Amino acid sequence: MIFKIGIFAFLKYFTLNRKIKLIWDFRGPNAKQTAKHHSIHLKEFANLENLMFHEIDIQEKNPVLCIAFITVDEKDMKIYRDALQPHRGEIAT
Image (cartoon, rainbow, N blue to C red):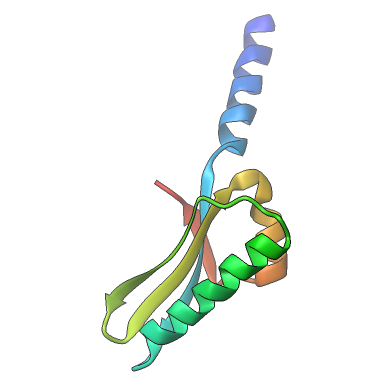
């Protein structure tokens, strides 16, 4: 029984310390500029709310698709998700 409790505590600790990447998709000829502008607002929000984050950046997938993203700890993910309403999210690698 003690061994099982130890495993569950470990799993709970491990899953709550994952990094989550919250993503916003931008499409069209101005996708890159829009994603850059959105990333500025992500930084402003994090600083204004005194929230931790690991990375805020953009990725150009192709000339008409670009994403803005913020990587946060799973424990803070709900605060960001509820306030900023990302298009999608994934576990960061």
